[in-house]
Amino acid sequence: MISMEHALPALRMMLAAVVLAAAPAAAQQVTLERDSPLYAEPRLDASQVTQLKQGATGEVIGKQGAWLNLNTPGGSGWLFSFNVRFPSQHAGSGDAGTGSVAGRLFGPRRNVSVTSTIGIRGIEEEDLKQASFNADQMKLLDGYAATRQAAERSARATGLAPVSVEYMDAKK
Amino acid sequence: MNQEPPIGIRRTLVRRIPCWIAAALMAAVSGHAAAASLDLGRLFDVGKDLRTAAAGMDEKDEIAVGREVAGRTLGAAPLVADPQLQAYVNRVGRWIAMQTERPDLPWHFGVLDTSSVNAFAAPGGYVLITRGLYEMLDSEAQLAGVLGHEIGHIVQRHHVKVMQQSAVVSAGARAAQRSDRGLLVNNLIGTGAEVFARGLDKNAEFEADRIGVVLAARAGYSPYGLVEVLHKLGARASDDASLTLLFKTHPAPGERLTQLGDALAPRVAALPTGKEPAIRQVDPSTPPPAAAKPASVEGARAVQQEEGGTTIPSGGGPGRGIDAGGILRGIFGR
Image (cartoon, rainbow over all chains, first blue to last red; front, side, top):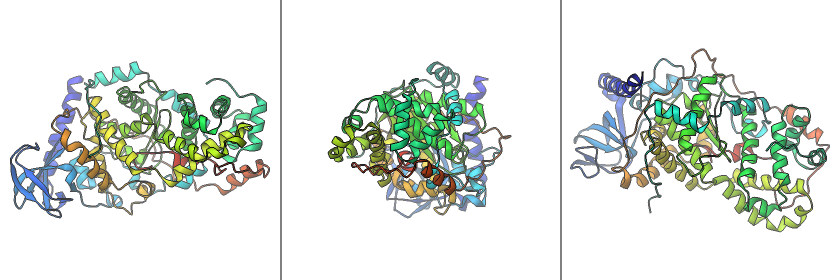
């Protein structure tokens, strides 16, 4: 059971790679938000394949952590994923998860209906302003709360262990 | 937490404070919302003037305000009727919250049954994510990033700090409030609402993004789930109705990505790879969310009538009800 859970992300990555490889090239285009080096490996200290200009496009062929693997006219390599933007997609034209490049890249969804694409009206600012306290729902919310023990048990069963990571400052 | 305010105080409140508190208390009197009155009673009993109440707002006050806000949000959209999903999100959320400096707040997590794409944090440990956003997520790491952002707002007490600043500005109103506890509470929350309505510094959102990345990593997940979600949101067309509130009240996803990337670049080599477990799906037998009911004009009118036309002398606060849409600060909302 646990090994299945471990295998799932890897399996999904592989599936994503298959989907990406099979999808038409035009659907995987991303645009550079700023001038950025294209690296030979997904590391900032790797050698640079080329320097890409803002507005340049590339074809996404994979991802790893903070990095996207791109095919560009200047060569193939790894780009810091924060420096690209995915093309805008209309959710109503299909599943928001699978319909967009970003959706395909960051994990193809299984057969689920994405309710936000149905086009029905969701809560808006006015609804929040005018809503009154719902005690029955609050009682439900209270009942769903997890103890520390239950949370930790569940996390460990998923293979998660705490890691020491310092908070980050904004760029000075 | 489990003390009802004396009935005399409750009556005083109904007379003197605006509609939302009155509505909550009337519900309490009729036996449906005891929890709401407890928390207001808690705020009431602290025996502070406006400035000290806000500046020295302790954890219990924070929780009381957050609980009221969360309960009102649940009045706008109920929880998805999938208990296993809700329990799952609570386990994931609590695990992430345990990696913070405030692991023992009464953390509550919920998935709201609305197609809107958003997530909210209210003070004291209340985190709500909409079904519209939840169903965009593809891994538990992405969920961890979203919840980590919201948890970041709460741990950093972003809303409380704003209320404190606001209270300092309106300190001149203290004298009048010292003798009138109802007015005090009203202004404490009302003054906060005024500030929340103006919107907070974008930097609070950027900070919560950085915290979301770190908390996901601390909990053992890939640090980049939130980054993926921001990319997904950026790829949603700006005229997408389900993102109206999000795009209206928040820095654009692209701007957030740029800020986050700049902060993260020096750390990227040192961050752990982390895991990307599968995310639990909403039970397929759960019907899609009902369309939100149009805001009820009739309801608002009825509450005003119950108030008997009593107006609050303005003591520095706006003298109006709490603005849940403003006080709630989400991943995509300030």
